[in-house]
Length: 392
Length: 177
Image: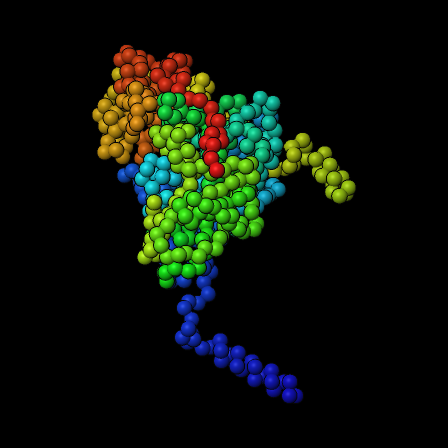
């Protein structure tokens, strides 16, 4: 009987609760089907149209404001050559043809039936850091290196899709083409296609964002961003590259002797201190400051990151935060006791192949400055006595 | 494990020879032909058709000049120049254009066919693309005014910078510790 009274009391209390139309005064927002960040958080991409042609341009990730290694999908950098197309996923297909036993067309549902893989990888535009190379360095991490982001991607290994069509022995390249207005196309060597290439439909657990190729993109871990063809709808298996616009007129590295390097895909070992970095302020004067940043290599795992706080005279090993994943951003941290005086801080990365990140001078000596791609030089910041951080 | 292997073998036997039976559908030759716009550097994939420098002159004026300017010199540093730059590839500020940099004439055709005019890509006929390609090559002094181009003659056009490209040799920069 006592139980029954308690039950009735509880029921009445619950009924009163659900009937209330007033929210507690501390509630900022009610539950929503798709979440938003706090209204006071404002970090954002910088968006620039590189020409007056609508849709041509790039947006940059605010690397200096991010923690860990994953870039929120809303802040992933973008680079488009003819805008973001509107695509109906129910009608979108992937056609595989050319030097195959059987040309095959896959719907999105078909692709999701195949064995999937989820991996964390960075994507970096090969033009990232071009301003550093040309001697017009960025004042913030976003301005200098913001054409770089890192996501958890899910999709089908490309080798499964090619195996389903059946490769002929003379198949050496795959021309990947997107459904954007310019039908951007790149030729990819078969070795990469059969190694770790993915056809991805998901980014950070949900469908790709339109700016990242919704509903389907090619993901070539460690390769320059442009080769990771977005809005992918056709794979043409061939014995030679097409020599498309984007692999001849652009994304080729013109050397001082007038010859241009072609099919440079790998983004070599690189690193960047993001805190403290340009535009930030070390408040409170001399004392303990943790230096933190990101390191990455298109050739495998980051093995070591060294940091100098005295303009490159001495270097100390930073701690790499686990898990250290291949062709993914790796967060590094190193404690620093600042004496409160002007100084220069910088980082350098060594990847698992033993390759050491060079300085700008070493890159210029090897390649000149008449191109815009594959720059990966050491980036330094000046910390001034007043705590302000600027470009060197 | 053994049972899984047996199961897979049974499925393979039932559904045919593909690695993942039943996934995806065979694409007909017509379907592939409709989608396949690839133009290879040796000319494979070029469509039937032809065009002349003369026809290209008029088309260029209405389809291209608004952005690339009357003589292909580009506009306001925003829309790229299509001509000029010969001899500048070793200069401090090289000017990379169709004439000075692009290694294959087929790439000119392919770029126009798939991406131009910027606001109406894919609207030009094959004859129009051959004609505009011929005119742009003529602006660069690569083909004479009387030139006609088609599937056979376009790939035979030798671009000035045809031998200007070398393979990647990465990693190419050696850092000193």
